[in-house]
Length: 357
Ligand code: KG4
Ligand code: ZN
Image 1 (cartoon, helix red, strand yellow):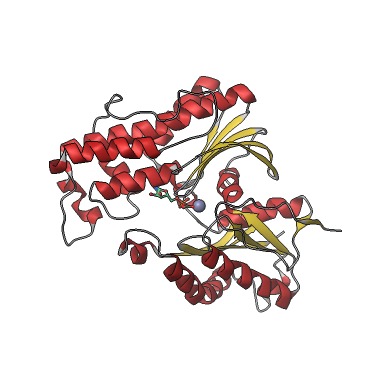
Image 2: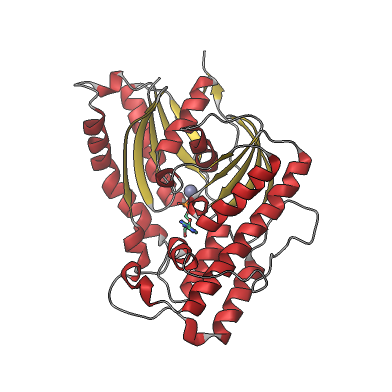
């Protein structure tokens, strides 16, 4: 079964073709450089860019896949991110997917973006069910009990900032450009973590939710007390100036990332008391972080279960994960009507699929 996946929930426009054996073709265009000029994603600019790029990207994808003169006879399903995300951005992908589905008479599947992130972990390794899913991105921090590829229950989530947001905000306050998570990671690798420097917020309770706002405040306080540690301003891209960062900032970055990672593992360890997972999945943009990787490896080893993290190129937003999640839904006989709606962040995604005959 060949599935076309379409992703446009935030600032990446991406399309991919996935079949039973894996990825057939994949294209992606990131708008990060455009939004970096404004210090964060500007929704109106994001939707305009998606609308401008989605058609040409489809042409490149089909050329890359080499499906012959009539590719649409070979594509079995069209899967699209329906949410959560920015409404204007989601609408571009959903409307595009619907028109392709209608024009070529191909069943449509609406995918939950967060499920896509988690299921990307199954592309290179088999997932042992049930799995504990830790979804950590720029907008979300969710713990999931994953009973199967199509049965996922949220056990806990952030009540304020997401893990990625906490990294991006500290990076921004330290003088790094948006999105600073990966740059903070690079600085942290050159620093020495002090486990007492920052708190593990919202862990002195018995629930599975997260709150990163206290950590952000502690980070802001530290930076106001150490103004000389800030990243030096300059004309050349920050990536090329990373070597100029103060040792103090590198140490603080390492300590801050350790606080983020340990806050996540404290709750993940607690979730393992609710059910016994046979595997641990960590996905989303922040799963690319080296300290997060190290702390979750430790947890998985302690529990003697495998740790699955999607490969780096599939940690951030991409369409391969959407096509893969759509492929799983198709295997379960699910599809959506052309009335499929886009669901913005903060709203529950309805289980409104239909069973295919
Ligand atoms: O999943 P994703 O690409 O987009 C969303 O759906 O949000 O995640 C983006 C987030 C950003 O906050 C970015 O700074 C963070 O992932 N990120 C990282 C790293 N790479 C990306 N955070 C920490 N360390 C990294 N290496
Ligand atoms: Zn994402």
